[in-house]
Length: 377
Image 1: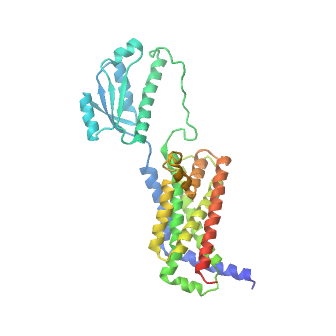
Image 2: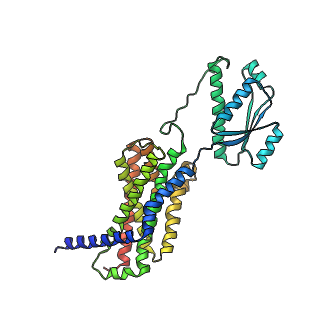
Image 3: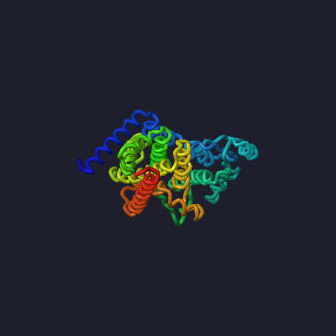
């Protein structure tokens, strides 16, 4: 038998052994298939960046029809949950106690000013402890007031139209629903966690159980060991990714405007980089606990904080931005959000895919070198 045929037989046998290992070990199936589904449910249903039912104290010192109409718009909005109070002092006490996040005030001369000069003061006082949340709530409040003014103008009650009318349009995520933004990004976290954590344990587990010595007694090469470790976990990780995509599209109604095949292909690149990183960790340590800790600290946490999923990286210090370029998750967040919400935008996808390909090659190559050093030839 030729050397190539022998290598193929060894690799097939090793793949069979790794597949049986995965099937016998419920934790691998749990991490690879069940955990992505559970995480998607938790994040998809439990995490939202859109404040809704924000409690605000409402002080109506004017009982005119205009004031009641504007107050009713706040009451009917899904973003606010007004609580009627009778004085500003009472409203301030509720803000101080944390019962409400703001105060909506219409003064006693609101209707009179509106009838006299088509201008009147509306006060929206907000708790600014969480600046981002405050800006969103402020935008919702101004939006309600703006729509009320539009209706008045349409009825001929709003006076002369302003010289400029700003017409807002939101591209790619027309409903401005944060779920459409979060779910594609969550694929990145799920694949990082499953890809890195799954493989971070496999070589360390061989050392801990003492089966590595038996493996070394066979003629198998480091390259064959590497392939045998990557292929089964690659299939497992892609299965979890496809389940997450199906749930994202059909359960959370996130639009997939790009090519599904392209998403699968680029997900494969990202998964290879994650698996390579996990195997590199596993080949560098012989203790599963240490490998798991390193994979969480060096793999999952940077993907969470430095991928651009939750925080705008352009607003971070330059040093943090430079570090983020070393995180594979940064590029896959760009890819998944582009393919889901914008489509096949090649000018965005190709550079990110190129970086992922380079990282996958470097990480898998480094892992092979590490294995060669630790395993006798």
